[in-house]
Length: 466
Ligand SMILES: Cc1cc2nc3c(=O)[nH]c(=O)nc-3n(C[C@H](O)[C@H](O)[C@H](O)COP(=O)(O)OP(=O)(O)OC[C@H]3O[C@@H](n4cnc5c(N)ncnc54)[C@H](O)[C@@H]3O)c2cc1C
Image (tube, rainbow, N blue to C red):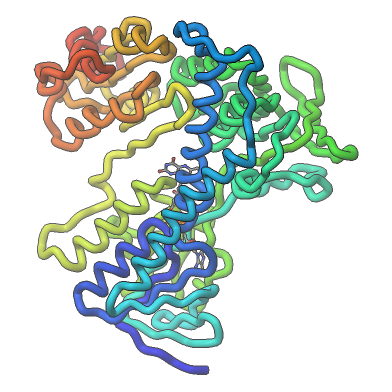
């Protein structure tokens, strides 16, 4: 076997790997980056980019159907969704992002690209495509894939995952989605807007069990208003194929015991790609769920090996994977100021319509952690911009620590919420009291302009330390 020596090896060209490879190469290190499938990984090819592109098409269909309520008349023939054209648009956006990334990394000086599956041979060597590469520093950025649960009958059913559904050119007559969380709900609304009947099956008593109950309830009612069927408390999910249809046997507290659809999407979480990486040969430790164990600076149990992105279980988003790159790069190259995982404020969005922007603790988590808190609330019906746009579903909710006056978290569900949440993220990152934001002038008319108002109307203190 041929052995090639590098200063650094990066495994995976997802959301952290390419930027890190370029940074290392820019510091005059010889770098090998190994990708077994598609440049850009999940986000670009089967995650954020394709879903948000499809969601944009679905939104146009939705707007067209309700154009008359804005005084806009469309031809009586109604709205037709051309799924081939929708998919072609998505493909153009994805291909541009993937190709741009691949060209950039292939054109980076000091950086050699290997296509193939990487496996550790030791703590300092990795095999790929019949060759062995060695380096003193190895960075793992292998991401994850959809989890396939052991439901009875699943092996006899032609089920879809979030990856294969993205390739479907036909419109499902009835899409049954197992899993009422982030990925499942985005697909649910998207396909309903394209024209499919959609049923979401969730085993918990409510959707989105990580969110505060009133936030999850508002999302559920927005989905139900679009005639998406939601089946909660679905115990003992069992699948069966019957010709061209798939039946899910569910024992829900309410509703019939079976749901039959033309297609079934399994969206019950993701698992890390760490089972086929030869980690045991390097001595790199994983936790019980297969995530690579890392410390506050993303170092694994083996000196000289780091793990970044979804495979370390410290985040499940593109921005967390990219921030992992920033942390590792800063600590390697930027002098004494250490950057740490524990400095990261958790934030994300759920891109249903209206979107949910989230940062920090929910009310429930803040109380569970023993904070004395004050809550600020406002329905979107009292946000002028939402009224003007005719999109008044949702709410603003901010959780403040009663003693320190620091913002602990916020949920903004409503039009523009995925953008509006950032003023709260920034104030939390600055570590200043909520009064700074309360006293800041925001632009009228926006959703963000009501955040200072909400902070000026905080409720009484509640919580264990009252
Ligand atoms: C449907 C869906 C929608 C999403 N939407 C959003 C969103 O809107 N916003 C958001 O922030 N996040 C979203 N995510 C999550 C986001 O895509 C991931 O968190 C992000 O891509 C993680 O980046 P990563 O670099 O850790 O891994 P990945 O992007 O998965 O990249 C890992 C790469 O490693 C390669 N690889 C794996 N094993 C090996 C090996 N042994 N050898 C060589 N190469 C290997 C893989 O082929 C892959 O290219 C979504 C995910 C899904 C599934």
